[in-house]
Image 1 (cartoon, helix red, strand yellow):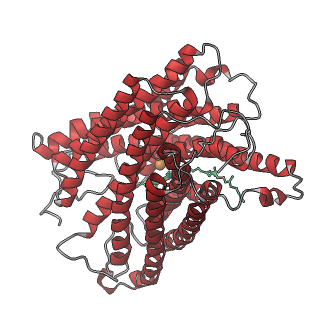
Image 2 (tube, protein in one colour):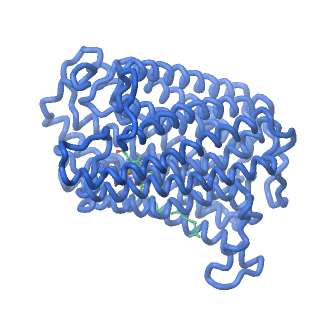
Image 3 (tube, helix red, strand yellow):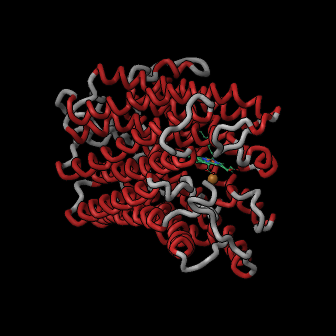
Length: 558
Ligand code: HAS
Ligand code: CU
């Protein structure tokens, strides 16, 4: 597809080696999408009581495969591939060292994934994607996940080096917005994943091997969520990169504001990490005061998302009015309704409105008591990660894969991509809608099919679980369509030059606010906020530890 020329050179191709690197990430991401999708289909059928699993496969084993392949592996591979493409696109080719780091990172992540996958398949790691203690997995599972994280650090280092090199070579110039965003996401990732690395290396691995008998459950969960909330923004920010930088170009206009976009990414760096305790509002062992502080900080991290919503509305509206739109929503008519590269991220944005609102409910202490550990939470994250974020990723894959494979998104594939986006929207509305409802009726999350001994309350849930299965089946068909389209784009679509759209912003010629790209300032504030939020609760856990748990492994609970 062609684009009206606005701003950065849209004809720029990646060199062959960088393209190969990006494609390798996309192929592995697609493979995980297939595995995770199959697990998902089986799960919704089991949970609705329609299917019994054969060959001794357990529901929770399947749920672990689903969470790990999709939430952890698919996302990380897509993100690393996308970010490599982004820095190479806006800063120029990677150097051989940077490329080598990316490949080392890629293979380290693959080795880690395979190790973890073998343990899950052997039913030695049926601990779900959050691997909460006292559920205990084989130590190789933890080593595998640690390798995925270490691999991502190595790859992130290569991307950061490309950004730093650009800044050195262009002293005083404004760095390309996309490269700044990639740098922020990587720095956030490096700081937050230290928490889970410490949990895995110093707590879970020694305990799983048997060097120590007991594990401190509170501390391990706290370290996990120190990482886990920022993890959800590590997924979100690449989608925001597409929304801020790529979508305006696709519709044929400029981004609303470069400065606003940078400011919002800076706030994500500050506030994504010191908020993890909002996942532990019902946990014992953490003072109410510190829960309160982290809830306040959680509401701070909502601000950059509201800024993003504002900026997107402004971009769409300015564009529509330039085209003569009238009335409050007249601008909607002028958006490119037949371009899948726009429609998929746009459906994502729409889903993020209820998804984000649900997040505010979750973060509000009193309402959290109602929804915590119910399937409402599963509904929440199927709107956020699995629609807002993942549909944006799919929309991006539909130009990124052909961009790297030297092919184009043909009319036929664009049409299929639109169908894929719409089936996803319908399937997810049905499934996630049903999850939100039965969550409010008290149906638990992370739960196999059960009639709960014929309890009256549980009878109410069954019809909704059947509805979930209908939505889930549609989603599975949609995943098959994604895979078909991506394979076509990689190997069979007509040859040509697809673009990686990059827009400029209306305030292109204005200076960047000085502090926004002052990395010393960014890192000092980030660390200060983490210390404020975590020093006391973690010290309390260390000074007055609970007795610790021995752990449940295979053979003890299933
Ligand atoms: Fe969340 C649980 C709070 C966002 C993912 N969340 C989860 C879990 C996951 C997850 C995976 O406070 C479960 C973890 C587990 O396994 O236990 N979440 C929030 C809050 C936000 C939020 C406050 N979550 C996300 C995002 C995720 C994600 C993003 C993935 C990518 N979440 C929670 C809490 C829990 C939780 C508690 C724990 C619950 C419990 O008890 O277990 C906020 O960041 C949301 C802010 C977003 C907005 C929306 C802005 C809207 C935009 C779109 C604009 C639309 C346009 C289109 C322009 C305020 C930007 C316009 C066009 C038209 C035509 C209208
Ligand atoms: Cu969170």
